[in-house]
Every structure is written in C-alpha cells, then in structure tokens.
Length: 43
Image (cartoon, rainbow, N blue to C red; front, side):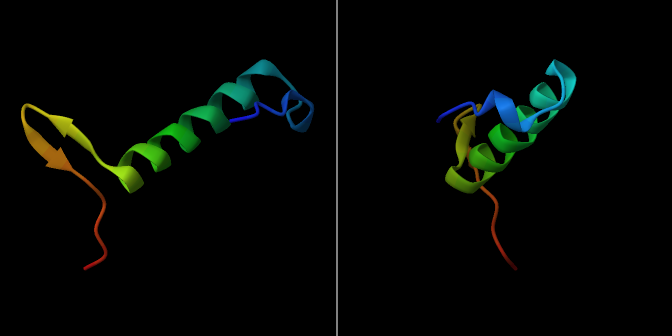
C-alpha cells in the first residue's frame, strides 16, 4: 500500500485514516483469534 502522505494535513489525521483502513482490511479479509476465524459478514 502506498502511504500517500500528501493527502493528509498532519500526522494525527494520517494515523487515524491508517487505523480505519487496517480495521476495514482486517474485518474484510478475516483474522484468527484464539483459533476462531473472525470475519465481517452481511446478514
């Protein structure tokens, strides 16, 4: 992933946007926690 620093006004906004992106990526692709698969599902 290209960070594209020039899109953000300061480091705080960049870190906040990066946290949102990684949470979205984690729940979209899924991850394992205590041998249980966690993944976002539309109901």
